[in-house]
Image (cartoon, rainbow, N blue to C red; front, top):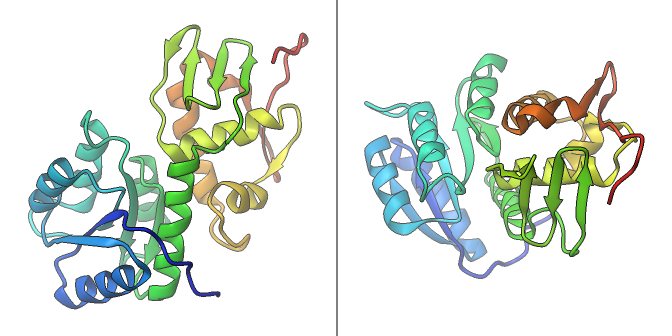
Length: 240
């Protein structure tokens, strides 16, 4: 695993009630060039998120009083915080715990104990997704009722705007740009999450599930190809 490239001062909020974990994470993020704030409870985390609008929150799930799940749910429900990227930390290795966090809108997860280098690399990968929005071109893609404005990072279904997280937008755009072609879960992990192909593919499944729900009437455009991955159906009359 290569060392992370230096960065230019994005704000990261680290939330954990274990002082040694906070110190470890903050040290490695600051050394890479991030500006770091910290919080030790869910209430502090929400206050800091609303006040500072960090680019990303490293969020522990086992917090006193208000759990990380509750914090994540409130972040995604708030107008000023719903687009903040979230990397969740958990000491629980059960799939159900990871699925719950992903289903609430986390962008990625890391289990304890973790490599500080891997955490910094994952933070960088998430922020690249947030900054790029999945595309640098000015194309507009229309597939049936679904319209994607790549440059503006906007999605509409039957003319109605759809709110997506940066990860959800990049996942949708990746499928849309390759409509009609099946995309393997491992390939999507590498393309969207910049992850090694041996990382849990359940991450992809949960984000596809959330994406379908948000797209509503257009959610059926995303097809599951059993044992392989996903694709967006190409309509009979291809529109671009």
